[in-house]
Image (cartoon, rainbow, N blue to C red; front, side, top):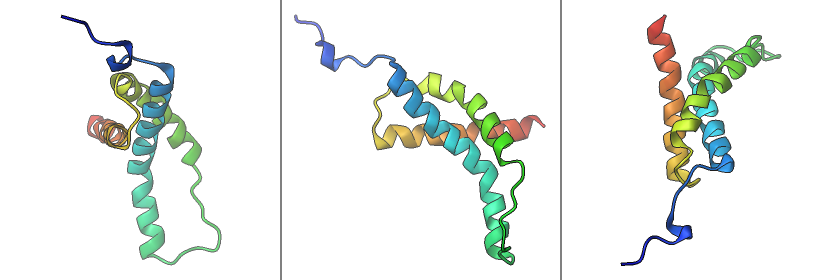
Length: 100
């Protein structure tokens, strides 16, 4: 009985880790950014968009999403799996809110 070929084996690679990490970071940042976007759309849109702490939020999202990238780095980089990583990032930020 022959074993699996090298092409059939899914393994952790740095490229997959960074793709899933980026998707998880976007999901984590999106959870924080959606309420801000909602206030801009519902309220009057200012001439200059003022969102002062977005760099701190993005940095924290990148740090927290290391866990999501590590969990999903063995999955292929297809849209379905990247959406799962985006969802993990969204959930990680929601878990952060529950801890507060």
